[in-house]
Amino acid sequence: VTVWEVSSQGAQPYGDIGNLDHVAERIKANGILLPPAECPPLVFTGLMQRCWARDPNDRPLFSELHNIALDLGGQNSLAQHATNGTVSNDDPLTDTRKYPPEFWRSLPGLKLRGVTVHHLSTQLLPMARVAAARSPVNLNNLTIKFVVEAVVKPTCAELVCPRDGRRGCAYVDSLEGPGTAGPASALLSYAWQYLLADVAGALEVWTTARQRDPMATFVWICSLCLNQHRMVRCLSPAELAAEFGPRVTQIGRLLPMLAPWDDPIYVKRIWCLYELYTALTNRLGVEVNIIIPPSEVEAFEASTTSGHFAVLDSILETIDGEHAHAREQADLNAIRGYVQSLPGGFPSLNETVRTHLR
Image 1 (tube, rainbow, N blue to C red):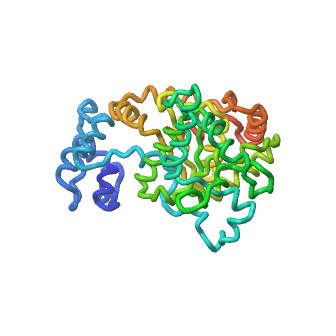
Image 2: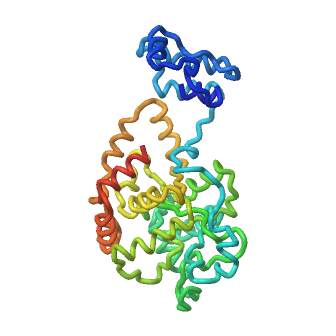
């Protein structure tokens, strides 16, 4: 019926019948809807009519409908899935009326700069591989945590921080020139156990699907945009909300990264759940695009298109913010305190995140 409504440009099904009882009688008598004037015949006979088979056993499964849609010319693009609100390539921070050039030289502006997708794959990843070659770390196991210790901190250790004038700066503050850093287009929500290659790959897939320029798409990533040379003081629950909430709403786009897709670290990390929940409760101002590493896409799509949703359901059922983990105990305490202060507490967070991911 949804396809019929789309094909008829929003016409009301059985709109020629005013009485609902008469509509019910017509349906019971196998009086199916007629094909809309501009509906391709194969869409009507191959998809709609099959869904209206009198015997439920003769109706196609969702996995079959997916394949029918592909046969009829549809495109299977994981990057188009799981968005929150209207999808747009507009970046709120590029509004020069609200954020003039001088803003980006101020402390608030410096805190909102991101690193380009292009830089991650063409500069940072090769630097990480060089660092790994000088260490016992396997080249296929270059986690974000390793990159911070082996590349980010050494690169920035002697550079003067533009935010406080002291030695040691955030990685993003070390970057100059076109195609390196600028006003954040999105905030990446991820875990430090993720591989840098997977992060870069997932962001490349997203930029390609959205027809964005990777040299002009700037992503705020905590490991690269926060100063790793400064000990972060413990924040109270209220300070935590004040620190993170405005950042995600100003940037206006969150990219939760799920990996591995069948047992994602993401749903076990309290920071990740908190970031996603914050974005989802600001529905009018924050767009959410879920991303998955290229190495995971094929397996994910093969599972879902074959109708094997049990794995996904089991993942969603494990979401439990109250027992999620964090690298720092102080972060864990602050986020727990903040969520527990909200209406509904952790049950509300769990259900909100579970509903969106489903």
